Length: 232
Image (cartoon, rainbow, N blue to C red; front, top):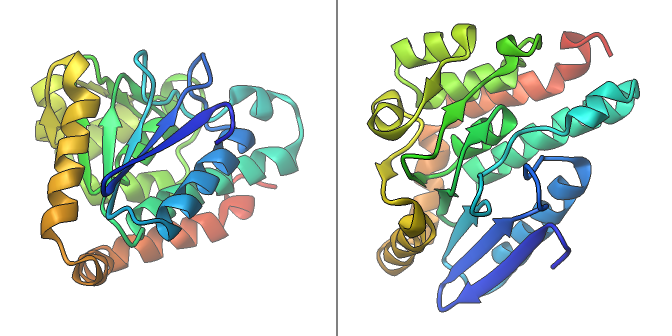
């Protein structure tokens, strides 16, 4: 794989890991590399996928340098690509287990919400920080939060940039399980291996598409309306 993303297939579990040496920003390059890895996982003999960050964090979100460049089309393309990646995870034909090896911020947190199971540690701070940095949450982000978070956490997370970690992240709906920091990736791979051994992939896909149908329609409508939403 390319420099910012690694790919490993061990038995029936594919592990995709992001590491750009910094904040694992979901730049156009990172998005392309992740999609290449998911293409590979879709075609090979894997039966479940783990998506992980590095030992410092899961992802810090979109590349703010692209927003600051003044290139409206580049910014729109990055926004669109990020939410398309979230939709791909939500609709992937194999279980997707997120290994939140550290904080998941902004688009990183929305990507985290797109996993079938989310494993984190006490260091896995989850936050939609947009309103704290002067940005308005895209509709697609709001719909991802609405789908996975409790009503109270959804309201605090969207309007107050509230941070959730540990048991509070589980209670809010950001994470499903918290383990020690050095066990996050291993535990995610264990969950993936169990899913690979026990689930019928056809039934898994058909069921999650039914469960997520309304949310996916809302997220897709948000993607389709990004140019209008942000005046592009």
